[in-house]
Amino acid sequence: MKTRVITSAVGLVVLFAVMALFDTFVFNVVIAAICLLAIHEVFKAFRFEKAAYIYWGFVPYTLLVMFSDFHMVRICMLPASYIFALYLVLCVIGNSKSINYAKLGGMVLFSCIIMFCFYSLIYLKQLLPRETYGYDALYFIFLILGFAWGGDSAAYFAGRAFGKHKLAPVVSPNKTIEGAVGGVMGSMLLGVVVTACYTAVSYTHLRAHETGRNLVCRLLLEKKNAVFCLKKKHKQNQKKKRKTRSMLGDG
Image (cartoon, rainbow, N blue to C red; front, side):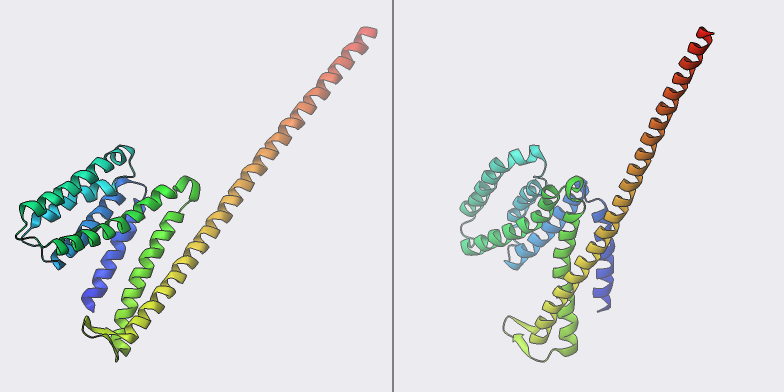
């Protein structure tokens, strides 16, 4: 448990550091690295350790997908997808005796699902630009992570504290019904907390923005009134001068 808590604390620090660079390419790099780690876990789960060339084929394609929010990279996606598919076919043809078609198909399917799930985090940045939508994209990312982490952590602690009835002993002997219920409740709770925090921060920021805008408007109005008064006073002075000159001329 101690290791799990330390890992979570370090992960939160890294998360906030990455989110601070949300509008830069660093965010894309970090998401790509995490995605490749996840794909590598799938690679090991399907026992392709002796065919590392299959995994290395995923690396450049994953990087292209994660940077496809840039126009030049997006142009390359269609030919790159064709080349990647061709590469996998050649791997199968060249190693037909050692590669299981069904296992390779399963690995490609799960890897592509993981890849495009991670890409959705980058797509949010493109779909909801900060100049127009503020930090809404960050809110959705934190909400997604909150659902995942809240469910995982709550399921772990609930299972440890109350777990008695096995959920699926053949598939995962340590999972319990109590842990599953705790996971669902944890996801809901952390989602509500994230939403409440973002709403409070957004409301405070909006009020500050409105206050600043009202202050600017008031200053502009005062400046306009001051200019109007100066012009009016100038006209009155000019009128007095003309009247004085007229009186002197009559005398």
